[in-house]
Every structure is written in C-alpha cells, then in structure tokens.
Image 1 (cartoon, rainbow, N blue to C red):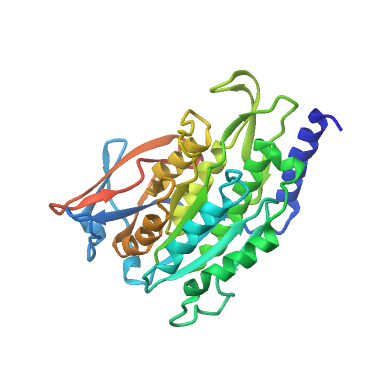
Image 2: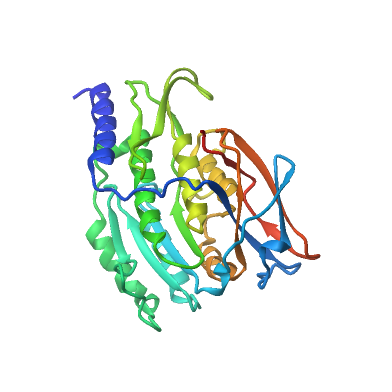
Amino acid sequence: MSTRSLWILSAAAIGAWAADSAAPKLNPPAPTVTLNVTAVDASGRPATGLTCADFQVFDEGHPQPLLPCPSVGLQPPSTMVVWDLLNSIRGHRGYQSDLLIRALESLQTNGSVYLYILTNRGEIYPVHPLPAAGQAEPAGASWTRQIRPLIARALDEVTEFRPADYQNEGIRAGMSFLRLTQLEDGFSRISGPKTMVWITTGSPNLMRCPYGCRDVSFAGDSGDYVAGQCTPTCPVYGQGDCIDYGPFLRRFSAALGHDLISLYSVEETPIGKLARADRGSPKDTLQQFADLTGGRRYGRGELSNALDASLTDAAARYPLAFESAADGRYHTVRIIAKRPGIHVEAPTGYYAEPK
C-alpha cells in the first residue's frame, strides 16, 4: 500500500472510530466562562481561605463581575497521572519509569492519585484506575507503596512495537487528543479540585497533510464537532493541506475549566537537546494548555515536583466564573488578587464560544 493510501485510510479510521465509538462526551460549553486560578503567598506557599471577593478578573481590560464560586479547596484533592507512551522518546522508557516509581513511592498525600498509561497502540491501560461509579476510594489506600511491581507488570503487558499507522504524527496526535478527552470525562465525575499530570513529549497541533486531508470529528453532548480542521493554507507551512487541532485545544481547555481540572505537563525531551517551540509543535501544545488552563509546564526530571504541587496547590485553587460575550474570539484575561502579598497563577486567555 502506498504512503498516500496509508495516510488517507488512517485518517479516515480515526474519524470514523471517534464518531462511531461509545467514547465519552465532553460537557457542553457552559453559558459562563470558568477559569481555575491558584493563589500563593510571597513565599510560594498555597494561600487558602480566600473567596471570590478576593479576586478581580479583567476581560480585554474590562473588569468582570464574578459569579459565586464553590470552596473546592476544602475538599480532598485528586490527581490523575497519564504516562504517555504513544508520545515518548525511544530508549527513555526505563529512565522515565524509574522517575515515576520514585516520585510515587515518596509521595505524601491525603488526597487520591490515579495512574493510567497511554500505550504504544493508542489504548488506555489502567494501572490504578478511578473508582467505579458510586464507589469511593478506600480510606488510607497506599497503593503507591507497591508501585514498583505494578509498573513492571503494566510494562510487561503493554510493551510492543508501535503500529505502522502511529508512526505518522498526524494519526498519533488525533488518537492522543481523543484519549485525553476520554480520561477527562471520567475524571470530571470526581468532586473537589483535580489535576491531570501528563507525562509526554507532547503532540503537535498543526501538521502537514501531503497525501490528502479530511476533518477529524469528536463526539460532544450537543453532537459531533470538528476537533481537527483541514485547511489549504497553513499558518506556518504556507500553501498545502494541513490539519489544525486548534478547535480541540479550545474545546478541551474549556472542558477542563468547567470541570475544575488543572493540567500540568511534564515534558519528556532528548538529553542535551531543546525541543522545538514554534507554532504547532508539541511544545506549543503544552504551552497553550498552560496558558488556557492556568496549568504548568515542567521539564524533564521534574515529575516529583509536579506531583507534589498538584496535591498541595489544590487547597488554594479557586474557580472564577463570569459571563462572556458569545463572539467566537480569543479574549486576553488578567486576574489579580486584592489581598496584598498574594500572587495568582491563572489562564492568560480563553476562546469564547460563537453564537
């Protein structure tokens, strides 16, 4: 089969699979915008006990009245770790698994931690999954103390060669984004402040389609929506078909905010090299998630810091909601704390839903 045929058939397979499968659906866009912010004091410690009245949001420079916000920081925090083997560096698996084991073994928490692997075949493998509907996490669960044999067993079961389709970064990106959607949907059912920690090289959000292109649709509560849009003129590459996953980034980021989930990425990078940071690159995807969700980007070797912060910062996380114009535009936002000495980590913008 020619490379051209492989690309077209593979892209069609992702679109058909995403539309026809029983994939969970993202929550419909709320009539308001919800932005998750984290407040810290001058020493970098979580600033707890604040209310909506302690913040001011400026949308395109205009102050916005805030809607009442829940005290989510009073509830136990939850963290979902997603170890992404579909987007990883060959030969780094042993190194990355050792970092993950050491980080989880030493984790001190009164919250809940869940662990999933996105396999080389684009499948979700639960190492320590979310509790079933209607069930609670066992009190005093210490599964992280047994993480070494759990990881060894998981790698024995998922280690295999990557299918030919997933050598193509466009196909791999589409499947990665779809799986993140599924994991977010399940995580959204957990109450309280939540953080998704994504261990990955990242996925590109803009790429060439030299052998033909078609839109990729994901399922939504109000019907399918175009997650990856084909365009004949690429913002970076110029003339020629490319696929733009900007619609997915906007939709997914809005769902994270609505469901009180912050996204922390831990970027896997080649030793001694810097990853590209240009428009559409994997690093650009991670940066856009941080900018749109108020999350953080961590570098190689900082997994332990990311896990610790995901749980300690949750006590100082505040969802700020306000009404927004349905104009379909990108809005820059600035969020400040009214109390002296309080610093705010927050999204720098959002995309308003069109009418």
